[in-house]
Image 1 (cartoon, rainbow over the protein chains, first blue to last red):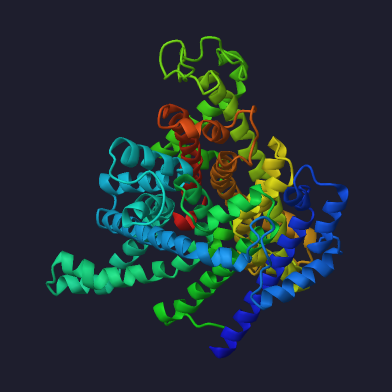
Image 2: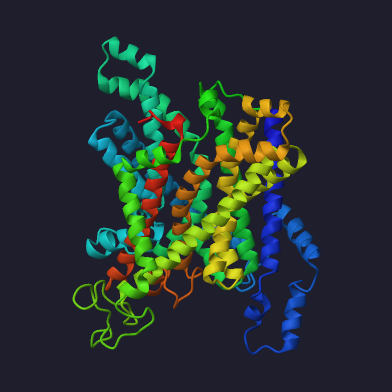
Length: 306
Length: 295
């Protein structure tokens, strides 16, 4: 176990190293010149050169990358070009909002997805089951920005139940979290359904029923815990999908998280911020995958980590 | 049992098609695809106006867009252009990008997956490590960065999406190829002295075809959604070229007053992605014998 953990941690570190290099390379070849953005249109050639030298942007790629990397391992992500603040400070200020949104999204997708999956499995083969499975396809085919705008239009503009955008109270969280969770709820309902159908076929379920237990009790006490476990391991993998989703959802709802930070940075060619958010997202994705692998043997003791 | 089923030639296309057409949901999906393809191909003949034409009577006296109905089937947009016309031409964008981006992603993914699965050793290991690395990238963030780096044109957007999307295919093809390479019929061919190329092209690739058809179909829905998202954020296909995503991008500031400008293209994106998902899912049931009987 310890050997496995060490190997996976080294592997994860190498993956993050690769991600940092590729992102750096991509941003290095960016045709839009960040120095021009900082200096403004009226700057003289001398000023532009001075700023370029100050930021170290006139040095060769590998020198710049090495400097970034040595900073990064010490927790220094550099300074924003335009906001004149440490990138780590900017991200730290925005991260809680994004984590809250993601927690809300996970809660929504599990709540909706698992419930629908269980209902579908119980009514297997009947019209309700078929209807729910079509619904799950609609959920995974719906573009998040359209879902977001639709929820905004119906529940905020027309009905006035929720605020139109912003951040602060629980009411602000509901619509963005549902928007983020709907796509995943489609996948979860399908996985939950097949997991539940599989479990309901097992002998011990028949035994439990034969013993005279009620249908509801068998379902909740015997089938559900076994069916739900393999699904739990998937949450770690979701993080990657959510990291993309928050860019869209935060932009639709004006949610002040790292997705919006990244989006504004891309538009203004603020490279240190883009780098920083990419690294934070990649770290979250790698940790999520690692977590998913690590909890699998606890859920199913037949699986041994190698 | 599983081995004998797998060593038989892939399901005959004619019977697979017949079984596909018996499924109502697949038929519904196919109908939508045919409708959208038809609309896109025949756009110049069906469309009542030119896509960029700012119509003289396309706005109210106060300069507001017109709601659906009357002279304009789906209403007009903020610039007084006919929405129905722009939807038809936008379908071209969605389909071209959906098919091209997904086609390229499928080719890259298959190449990487087959190479890594068939030729283990350092090349295979290297390719799979690279795939792992790509999995750790936040896909949408990467696509946005790439689209911002290159000036986004139709084909650039398609290539950006392809570069982000080949990873899943590569992993599926890799798993499938490694399990095929260990099957008895491949071992038998090797014993008979068949060349690597013969094993690859005659025995492994044909068995991958059903998987590729299924992933190819499901993948189009992913690319359609990704294109729409990029265009919605303003880094996808650039106006005035209409795309369902950038129609929403152009008009979203006004969506409280003119919701049809957001929800008509939104519904179109959803329906097209849904159609490819339904057909892809039905194809999986029809083409993959191990999946049958699960319902």
